[in-house]
Image (cartoon, rainbow, N blue to C red):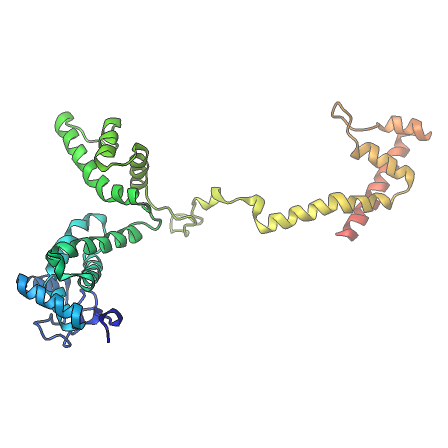
Length: 320
């Protein structure tokens, strides 16, 4: 069986799993109760000499020797602990950072070429940091703050450089400020070889926090308020869409059907009184004008209008 298809995780004593590793015979870690015990144990692991490292790496490459891979990994677990401490400022569990770093170490061991003339420690640092970086970017916020290469560079450098600017400003002015000045933004962009706009955007992302779109009600408020209250679009809400469609049918097909149910005189009165608009924004003919046209009183026109509206209402209800 090739190493490519083997799962080394149970044999490498990750801090969370804390498995027995009897499959490897080289002073492996016993089951541990806490992170401090794990760190103490890995710091006691013997280091490999350059000759031993070369021989183990060749055994792994040429013969898929899993025990050799285990010895290479175990001797460098302290390196993962050391590197993971550099990322404690992101508020993520130290044990999780170590575990992700151990995954990177195992990938480095699998890909290490002893003929390249470098020590495994130098090669593994890249893989360990890469796994920890990926874990931080996925779990630091609910929403990713860095996706491009430039944004990743900014994410892991902006915080430390900004702290340096704050310290210098405090020494010079005796005050503390949270935002960077224009000159500091320019200097940071030059040092990291990125655009000023990228620096400003990443600073804005890091200074913000996660907000629940639809927060649950708490004890102090029967109905919690969240962005969903002002982000929702009522025009595209399904119920509103159906109501709008229904209203459109009533004002087109339904109204035409209701008008057809009227006699000619009633229809003309309704159209002139309710459906016509003059150029000046007013309605059609008045009651007196219609009364003069049909040779009846204005009161009679009003009565005809009321009767016609009732008949149209009945027709619209049947249509709906």
